[in-house]
Amino acid sequence: MIAATVQAVETLRYTPAGLPLLRLQLQHDSEQLEAGMNRKVQCQLPAVIIGEKANLPLQSGDQIKVKGFLAQRSAKSTQVVLHIQELQRIQY
Amino acid sequence: MIAATVQAVETLRYTPAGLPLLRLQLQHDSEQLEAGMNRKVQCQLPAVIIGEKANLPLQSGDQIKVKGFLAQRSAKSTQVVLHIQELQRIQY
Image (cartoon, rainbow over all chains, first blue to last red; front, side):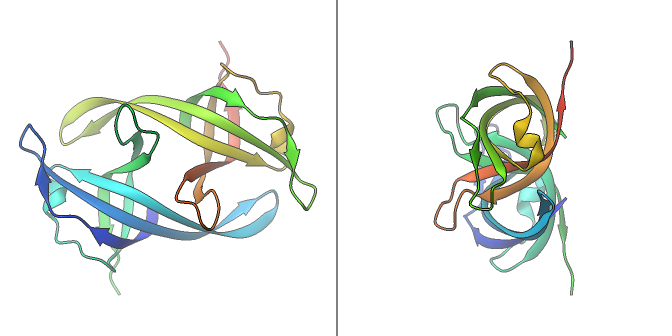
């Protein structure tokens, strides 16, 4: 799972099959070990939730933990989108 | 870990600190469960290896399994790059 902050939330839409679909922009900050050195990592990642979880009340600024898979935005696109399969809200 | 095929390998370079750095283009195909349905997923993902593992003899067509983290290509870029921390070659 990766921890992320919700930066932006689009309006809930529906797929042609009638499934709720929510597009988000996530910001992921972490510290990672690479070549023996710690480095701070920032990553803005477009994400999408398809299905029931798309109805969760998410808003900009929410801290979440997500799990999912990466896919291209469309057949012609090279943009990578995180498809969220599991989502936890981080409570403070 | 995600399974991927190496699509392209750039020439080995070195970071300003003298660490070997190898940029790759990966193709990841998988089947994922989303909203109760299986879907085939394709994803072309730029990747980079920094450190010793960058010296591994990789070439286009190689099947590998990788583990790592996502980061932006640069501070100004929105392109997402997979930083490979672990790499296994899939043998046939």
